[in-house]
Length: 289
Image 1 (cartoon, rainbow, N blue to C red):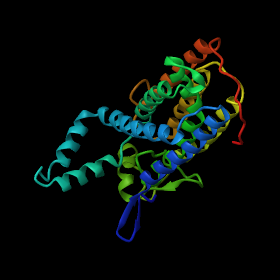
Image 2 (cartoon, rainbow, N blue to C red):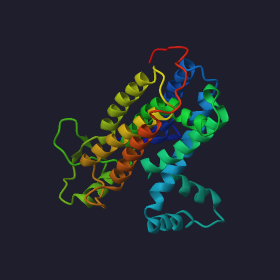
Image 3 (cartoon, rainbow, N blue to C red):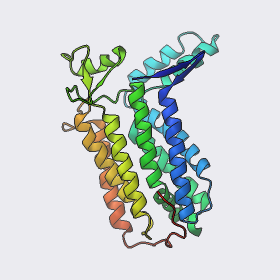
Image 4 (spheres, rainbow, N blue to C red):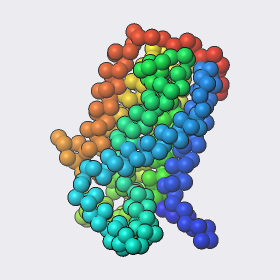
């Protein structure tokens, strides 16, 4: 794990760097999808606003799951006193570096994409059709961008720990990251290795992004690709939780698994509802994936 990179006086967080890289990759994929579909929209602006919304949504969802911890963090942030604003701001930034929930980020990102779809009017569509069409166009970029961002969770040690393992690809945790692992697995050795679940998600995301890109080569009913994305991404997250160390809260499932099942159900409903809906024109230009 390399939570920070120090270059002279510059102290860079690897999570932020990988989040930036995820945005860059998503922008490239979305731009290519706009080009091949003849959509006149600014991919960079779309991704930038979605990233901002997604980060805020992911942070809000994570923190609101435990309001007692949120209040404790607030008290710690303001502990230096408002007469020392710089110290308060630095405390806030330190708190904001970790603790993000996938489901909250997805909901906020979807809402922002739909709003931008209404504004951009892809394929000459308006209203809700334009909003949902933007979701279809963004599905491959969302899948791949999510996977790249997950590597940032691994390098920063942001709580995405797999189960303790002896597998040859297991990873060692830094000392402070081992604390929450031992809280769930008290007998975990100090040199414990865990499964690199973010790597699993990264590989799955690449396959999912490629698959969605291939599906998008043909004309599809508006919203159908979004349904496919919700089903498969939810399935991937549900399965990876079996080798994660998250607490089991509901019927032996973690929070993330319940949310992932919700994603699968919603995706299936979307696929059924949209299968006979409006079909957009075939892509006008094909570009390499």
